[in-house]
Image (cartoon, rainbow, N blue to C red; front, side):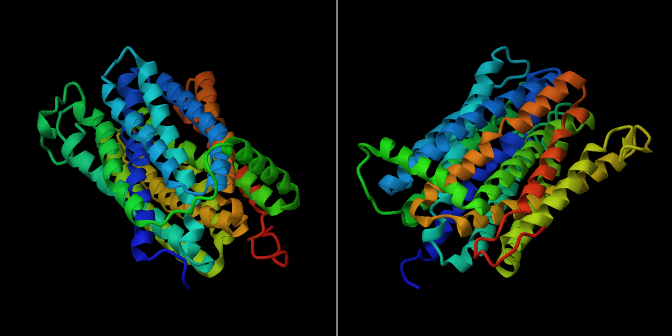
Length: 451
């Protein structure tokens, strides 16, 4: 069929996931967040609480911006100018994280840089996702989405390995994973190797985003920017009103709002949890990240194939079940016990093995779930305002984006326990699963809910 992107255009689009994944892998999850909580802020409980509130602020800003800007893009047409604009936020925010010295006094500046980068990556993703329907026929969207997520995970694994092998120092020995000093003469005592993940993430994105701009076709211009805010808001309000006539889309947005928030919560706090509860070093957490992201790449790829065969809804349903089980198992691990009641010796490796296994499960199920979710939205969306509806998807993901980090921050602060503090993610996964039962697969009213 003509009118779709050629292979180079599809590769350019998929490389966005490759370019943007290190922000999630290196900064949000496995390297910078646990470093911040354990070293920049000396008390890991307070560090987890502060990081949670920062993530909540960033998510709230994205929740306000994404649907409005998406509607404006649908009115005007091209998405690449918006991607370029928010890429500047991504690059600036990531680069400024270099300033996060051990015991830094200006913690607010560091958290502000993290929020800026988070806004950049999330908003750029909205506009990139909205390009999907114009790239391949509808029946190939699941495979495209799964392949994109898989490529993103591979990029995250490679970036993580580079950091562990060449940059991130063990806080006790000052050596990297392969036993060498951090490259470029970086000072291990000042944790410059670990702090370098910020500039590395910025450079990685700036380089690998280029194929999207050079190769991937963009939507044609439909209208001038003048007046686009008013017209975009009108389109967005109409799309929201139309949800009453499209209940399946409404149920999906509500479901994804909770399960994506839970998944992001586990991603954000998994490394912090391992550092504070299990006593892992940054290098230990990085190895954990390589395992989780590698299995995540395989899960996303297989999920895309399962999506093409069975549809995105069954894939999403069973992935959430796996995430509920994995989250409970992960929270059950401590230096004193596994599965809450099985006591272990303080030097036992069983909690570590269990947490490694949990990371693999959550990596595989999470990658497949996010790929299926992207296709499940496209199958229900009105392609005339696809960016606005991906904006609503971002709004759904960010309207309660404060919920997981804020509830984790609140419960952590009230309980004084990192272990208890992470428990709200389980309830959010369960709520998302229940709401998903009311979602149809977007192919017609003849399909019944999974429940």
